[in-house]
Image (tube, rainbow, N blue to C red; front, side, top):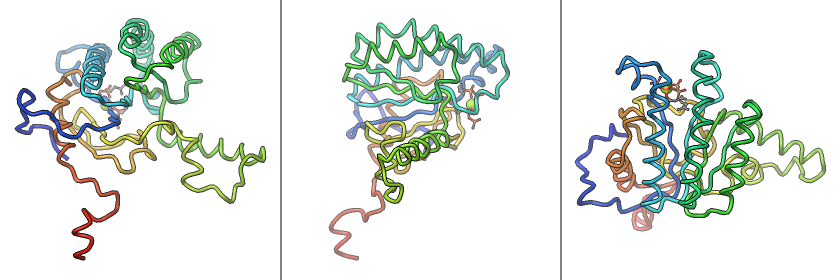
Length: 256
Ligand code: IPE
Ligand code: IPE
Ligand code: MG
């Protein structure tokens, strides 16, 4: 774990190992706005630019999957005015960004309890997903009204329904049987989780899928996230040794 302030110089060094899948908890919009004596919604609007920067970065570096935590199942508890401003922003952002995303061959999907959203927003999300479904350069998963516990619960419910329908023997349910019912089942799990905004927690993001992700925390507030900060995260990731419960390498394995 790091605060991201390494010596990495993006002009001279390129990260050697590129994660296939990056997941991001985009945190710190409210504090960014408060520091400027502005309402929290001002920070959320500023955060949109960082999303654009991050998508462009992933396209440039050949990252295949980007999963963004945009609104958690717990964020509904925020004041009505802030939730309303966020919904308005999602609608506008979808209209504004979708042409460019499509042009860049980005496949966009929305994950979460979408039934909680207004008809207008659901229609827009559905249309954006449909329009970009055939794109293959980058998959952009936007988690909205998403919670890791919700995800596991909905997977368990759907598996139970399949068992009741006779499509599945309940006695055979194990990790491999449950996995296809979870969100993101069709892409590799996140290699790297980035959380901006200084907090060192998961906040009910992808609880199942993050089992072996490398975690990277930075104090940078989300609206300040830029290519240089992403370079720091990827450079840090490139230096990690991922063991997945095994021993470091065959030589070490033989020695012990
Ligand atoms: C993240 O920024 C965006 C959402 C949760 C929608 P915050 O709004 O949580 O910003 P801070 O953490 O209060 O600064
Ligand atoms: C996590 O941030 C959710 C998103 C970034 C969408 P929060 O700001 O909601 O998380 P907590 O409350 O600090 O744990
Ligand atoms: Mg926050």
